[in-house]
Image (cartoon, rainbow, N blue to C red; front, side, top):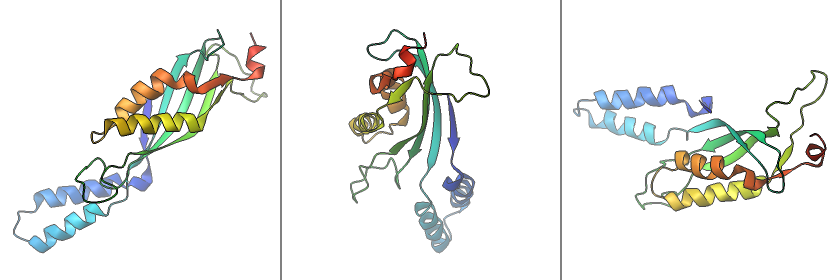
Amino acid sequence: NQCRVSQSSQMETLAVHIDEWRENDGNDNDSERTLLETIARHPSTCFTLSIQVDGTCENSDLEIAACILLRVSFPNRYPLNDGTNETSNSIPTFSVEYCLATDREAVCNPDKPLESWANLDEPKLLEALEEEARGLLPDPCVYEVVTTCLMERLFEFMTMSVHASYSK
């Protein structure tokens, strides 16, 4: 499994602003206020998780490997829960960028397209991820959502495709 932070998150810029704020000796309140406002207005953090899960779909004995790219976007001020605004209880936004399920031992010729052996019910998966995240508020939730909901339950949201049943 891998994680890649989106360039739009501008993490290096945020780190510079936080370092400047930490180095401020407290003598310049205007500078400190400006830095804090800059940090608060920073774009939200987005990243993509690449996750591989082995398992079987319901009504199938075929062992398959699923690869899913899950994009996670944090709302502003996440995971703060100070009750001062409507986003204080917000959860991250999850979206599926890519999903493929296949036999791990399958050989695919270069001139043939790689087809997924299973179809993902994306709306139901995203609903389950959001429900799991809400249940963890106000604590940060991405690790728990990915491990408990996505990795353990992914195949609940997948159905075998017709051509997969004829391939073995």
